[in-house]
Image (cartoon, rainbow, N blue to C red; front, side):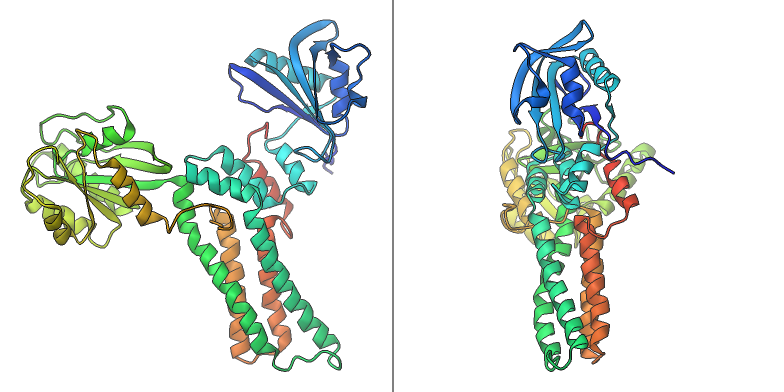
Length: 462
């Protein structure tokens, strides 16, 4: 039988194990104060950390016996007013790898055990300080790749998703309780006309859940970035555009057509948006075997892209190669860039827009003009309105989307049962199923194995 380790006092380095100005060793559990008291020597005489008031900073030394390990600041936080809702001590030391390692080893030597990955946040969840969706948002904040992703994660950490899920569950539970009460006491509680009333209550809940499920597409883009492929004829300025977006010369730029033979991938932030940009070989009919392979790969990447940027050389007339590219981007999310506007152009924005059926943005990769217009166009294409992340909830977690989709289907089954005039006790089965599926998002009615699997993805100090 496995020993319950949830009451152990745990410790870990909470900052990156690299040379830095400050390192933090975190200790949490019922013995946190007494363990650190054994190794901390305050500058104050007769100081006892166990009796110290909460949320105070204390200056002194960490010692292992008579050996001084480092000059530190110790922050004492009594539960439940701490990250884990347990007694917690954070030792702020110098940020050297060796010194952090020695302090952690000393804390463990005096009674703590090494924390498992994500165990501090797991304890915050198990102790009721945060729910499961908020715990997952902690990791999302750490891994945020752009401003939108960070704002969305912080919003969920503050409980925006939790509040909506709890309200939905309250509304569903009320209907379950009403039906069961009426079935138990038909003399005093009537179900006459209740189906119509329930249908009116279900419709706004279904609408809200459908909106949240739809937001998962935007959520995936927010967290993972927009897979963006740059297409164009050879020497249209694709590599120059890539270099402008990246902010450094990553792609080789020459006047020789066909310089780019393979794909080049970069992840960039364009004023809050993450683009996973792929520069491809110029698309044209060619006898060069190597270039043919590059063109074939470009077409494959275009098929998998969230966004295609079609770069047109405005100083050269359109030809059959442009027709080939226009066929590739037909009915796709794409933006057309009329490049080399710093030169004399032979193609107009109007002509290009009519041929492609898409909006055209005039740019000069050489002069680095028009990039702001490109950014605004991408925002319009992928985000509805201004993302403020206050009351708006964007689903960025696949697990949440799956649970919401399941709950949504259960509510639709309730509507179907009402239309088929099924007995009321049939309604409660699907209502309860929706209630439980929503509960898995915030960590209610969730299996221990799933909880352990989620927190195993966290770093050790979190």
